[in-house]
Image 1 (cartoon, rainbow, N blue to C red):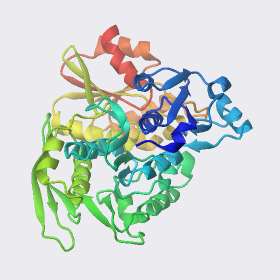
Image 2: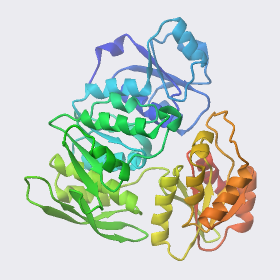
Image 3: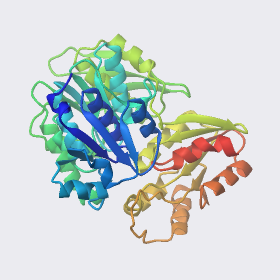
Image 4: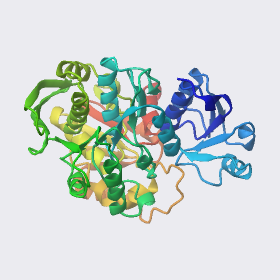
Length: 465
């Protein structure tokens, strides 16, 4: 698909190294647009961009945009950015990622948009896997790297698009869904929304945009989802979850180290009830069973067979930074996970404890953003109950310059009190390496968790211990 606009415009992405920005850039390049970008430092996303022959400048400089005609900025980019300032002087059009994403999605005729506070990336990946195996060849724009093709984005040949939305700055409302999945709604991005009701109201507006020929799939296990269902103008949605009132109801759960197994009991208005039996996914935790159920629900609703859905879910290759095994050291097994919110940590540890009943669980936790820790301090202190030890790393500020407002050592004490767990405070990566070398051994499950630099810390450990 070639676009006339592509012949005249040069689109510059400020912050192109982010997972969402890099994915959008790849898709726009594939559609025929002239794309380039800049970021403050090199990372794996930029490596993937260069393989796609997309020009990337390291460092922000006004010279980078001298030939650009359009700017796309990530939510992390401030007005003080040198490239943004020059673009404003030149009166260039400047779009947020969410706006540009909505424009690109509008070029494709049908979509599945995955929204919610947690579980979006895995759910998007599961839907993408089923659609791809069904020979539908969708365009995929995800918030994580899919192991099946080692990228977060892929341009397909059909008019389908599978998209992970981003509610962090409210821009997800600009995408018009054909089908949508609402995983859950939690106290996230309160720095933007200011109130939880504002966040819920935007989800209501998003769901109410569903056309008559589409459908929303809402998880009934989430209490906030139940609240917004009461306020929806139309009843053009299905529900899923382990709640017995769910139309796609999870039954007969069995969890092992290698897989989770379950049934989906389906009861839809005007249709004969049926069951998809013995679904297997190579993922652990009830949260991932819900994600797979959402993927199965939307797929079956567009006519994909139960057998193909089951086969696709069983062969799911996973997403990077979602409980990925990294290495073993002195009989301990190290994993990397993106969990950075109390709800995500709780769900992850529940799943791990269900299958690793006798192992000690050690969490190497790096809080992400000062604002998140300030807003959810108590919730964080309560979420490690299924662990045996927490190695508490310094906060990854993500550029925030806020005051924490309390002693970090007191936060450690609060975790000890509320989660009944041993806590070790470390000051830097070097201290972490030393601690692991001296104290981690035996059949322990060690999980690096957070959305900042903790992933690279964990992945670098085998080289230095």
